[in-house]
Length: 355
Ligand SMILES: *Cc1c(COP(=O)(O)O)cnc(C)c1O
Image (cartoon, rainbow, N blue to C red; front, side, top):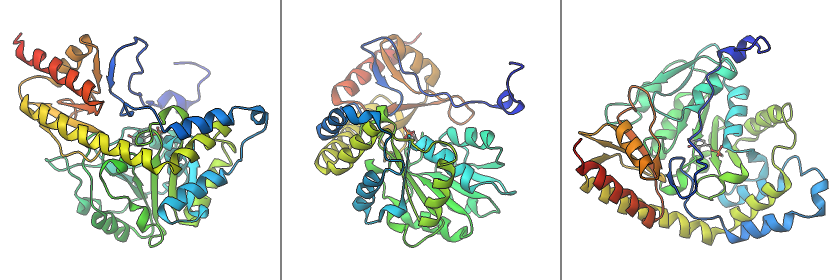
């Protein structure tokens, strides 16, 4: 509390990011980063960008990067927006599109930042409960709203919806923006980017933080009709004209163009996910079917909070989210096979101890 804060700041409940530990040597399975370093081509591009030209402002519209991103999905640059992490793209989208009387709809169990943006921009919202199997039921979104935000695959569940369901949502709310947050789409779900030409109300948001192993440079992007891109750009240019620095633009573009690195590492994560899931099942965990680079797990006779703290004592960190429907679950990022093996062996020890 401070007498200097505006009333709005007093009321905020900010997002709490997963821990970035200062102790070296921890096995870090708590924030869905990739366990592998980024594309060597991206690293080289960033080293090359670190020269005298850094005295100049970057391209304010990141045209070269947007062109490269659009090319991958068959869209011209005027259908592409980039921001300082997809969190920034989401923030601009909330401000640009969801200020109506009716509430914004999103799932009761989903990315917790959505609620935070609603508070920041004073947008009414209504959560829609996942069913008892933690799945989204599209029919439940058939109600007056300012728009819909859907993480696909969802986080923290990892469960993905097919494009038929996304289409259903887009048809249901033709006069509202449907934002599909595809932070994890590359690990096994189908991207709605292919529907952008067909639906003017679709906004697809993706990031370099997960499948491109570039969380450290903060680059996110969106695909949508030029009408929606212009809305985002108006907000961006009223906030920060240069959200992506020169190094980030160069690194992201090289990463977007390195298809071989991308395919190899996404496949690696998917194989490790299947391997880890089998190991966890053998230890008595229930695991939701994941199309992401994490699994959401639950153990019948051991509290999730307890497992998380026991794991931490053994130098492994995973994410435990509080909240009525999430308190019994743990979200575990897919590490290297070696890290997953350490996790499984520590879990085995923890579960064998019956104190
Ligand atoms: C990680 C994540 C983001 C944010 O990604 P950045 O691009 O690093 O800001 C957005 N949405 C979901 C669902 C995420 O898990």
